Image (cartoon, rainbow, N blue to C red; front, side, top):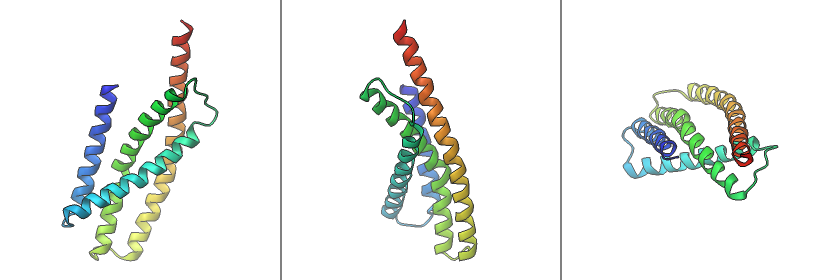
Length: 144
């Protein structure tokens, strides 16, 4: 479990550092707020994806479900932060500094939204498979 937590931590650090660098000359306090708000929004979306993924899965104990939910949502939030937050803030930063047009920004965001939807579908299926795999292992261990 500690290896998983370490990997999750590394994913978050990489995502935050990359996002921080993409915010370039913005004040540190604003960078922290932007990264914090972005991470919270991504966490809430990932939490919703988890809810979709657990359809048809019955847990033997509520604590068991809470632990799995916590690990899966933290992992996938980190992956989503790494994959999307730096790109989003980079495009917003470029638009704000007139480095790209509103039309280019809109096209980039629509493309990113399409990619996010596809990734979300894959994530929901992967989360479901992961939960089912954990439940199979749990059942096998309890039968022995």
